Image 1: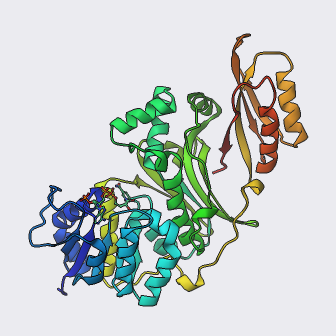
Image 2 (image 1 turned 60 degrees about the horizontal axis):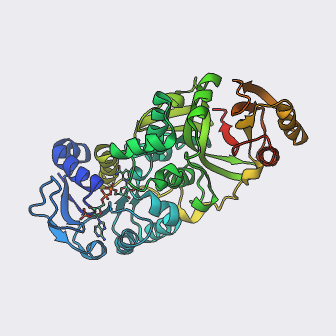
Image 3 (image 1 turned 90 degrees about the vertical axis):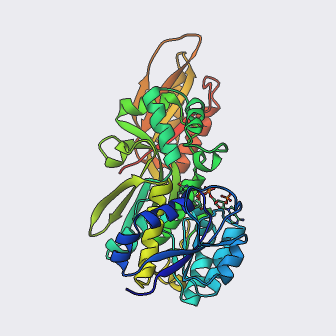
Length: 430
Ligand SMILES: NC(=O)c1ccc[n+]([C@@H]2O[C@H](COP(=O)([O-])OP(=O)(O)OC[C@H]3O[C@@H](n4cnc5c(N)ncnc54)[C@H](OP(=O)(O)O)[C@@H]3O)[C@@H](O)[C@H]2O)c1
């Protein structure tokens, strides 16, 4: 057997400790499969005294992760600290700078600085691998880069944030509003104390930016993503979605259009007959549509110690086998700078929910605003008669342009009879 692959691991939290556990438990099959052992030679974290439930005997401890990356006598540097700036970035740059391959789970860093890091990796002839950064345990980067490599990708989309999927699933099952379900998710440890990264769609957007780069050979463009989170999804919307034959999911979607690369993260009405509508709780799913393969659906756990460590180990095994990988599927120097497709030009169908005064003439005003913007209605639901209260009116439209829909909605929102901010959810043709 060849000499062991010696690795340095920076960060021993959920993922780092999970990685050490996996490498210890599955040491034999891993060695058999890649022809050499993977040995943890050095580690770094903040608190040396903390019990992490994993044996650290005989492993060199470093207080300074960037210094470990720059100096440790290892073959690979594994970054599991996190954060788009700071020590994670410095450490990865230091490792790549000395030609050491890097494995990371850091989606924020790749979404913000992926192109520069890919260029550095290429210049130094070192791999930069990040399977764990997108959809945790689902091997989607490998699928795109290898199994589906012969295709032109038409579209890639998915449920990329387990916290949001858990919240939306619970809202549907219990009928409770967002804030109440979020508080429950926080108690269960499925949502952070500060949930904004997840519920405002930023985490999903980080992953989408990376997926789109791999799928379309384009520079990572986080700033070019249209991002909306799930805070405004109401219990009523979830109920109406069911009645209309949909589930509400937070999706990240990317496709190349005649206007440029369209990247969007927002709540979507997903038809019940599609597989992704049934991906529930904390599960993630990614769907790739290729020109020759058609639709490929991958589902699994997008986070957690085990699934994320599983993805980190797959990258390490590629390096152990000496299999070269190109960071974003094409050489960094040939990544295209794609135009951003303006959201105003997006075309799709819409679900609109209004809370209106129960008075004659209200619907006529609403439909006039839609007619003037050439937005064509597909269906309308109005229920309940409460003369003193606002009642819900739900409209769905045929395909129309986003800008026209927005203009119509602005006018509708200003009607004296419309009592709350109108809710808009895009209906996706999947
Ligand atoms: N958790 C998941 O399910 C998941 C899934 C996919 C991707 N990821 C990504 O994986 C990465 C790690 O996430 P995590 O959940 O494992 O985070 P975590 O549990 O918060 O662990 C972070 C680790 O980094 C260490 N650390 C922080 N600052 C450091 C510094 N300056 N120098 C050295 N070590 C430092 C911490 O040390 P102490 O332990 O001493 O405090 C801790 O061990 C992130 O990029 C995250 O986005 C996580």
